[in-house]
Amino acid sequence: MPFDPKTVTIEADLSRADVQVLHDLCAGKPVVEFGAGGSTVLLARCAGRVTSYEPDPRWWKLARDRLNRETEPTCTANVVHLPACAAPPPDAPKAGVYFIDGPPEHRPAWVREAILRKLAPVIVVHDSRRPDLMSGLEFLTRPPVMLKLESLEWHARQSNMLVIRVRNQPVRWSNWNLTERNGRAPHLHMQGPKPK
Image (cartoon, rainbow, N blue to C red):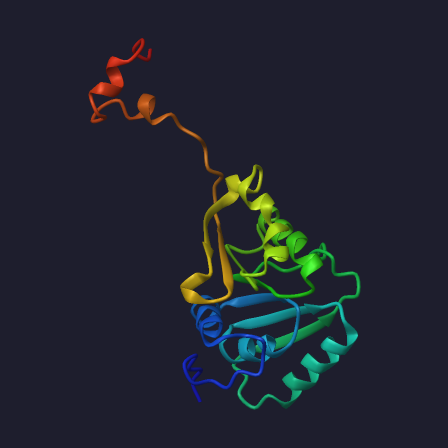
């Protein structure tokens, strides 16, 4: 049965809007997840491949057991128990999407490392309305991380997700009054000395 985000049964701490965002971003792509659970089963139904890291042995076993019972997987899904999971491991694979939903105290390090190591062009963080979690992501607005970002979408499409898009090339600052002299408003060139 095809995955329909509007009707699929949700056995996870995700809203219908969350499931729609995950489906739109992850369908057919390799996904790395931090924090296994019901979302792992949903991703196994629509992603191209899922590697999920889980630090808590109870959640690891629960997610693994649920995947073993899954009757509609469309891809290989692997749940890795990684007790020291404060950041992506050195051998963490690159993916199309990193979905970060593990223990809140470790999420900022996962986000930062995924951006700086260019592990994925899209990073999705769950619980974008939790002030304590979001305050831990203040580094998104400062260099060097900020210069690697293409966009931030808070509460993407009414969901509880933060969608971060990472640029291929770093952003360089440019003084548009100097680089785009032709076609600029005339009054901008009348103030002060003309650029050389």
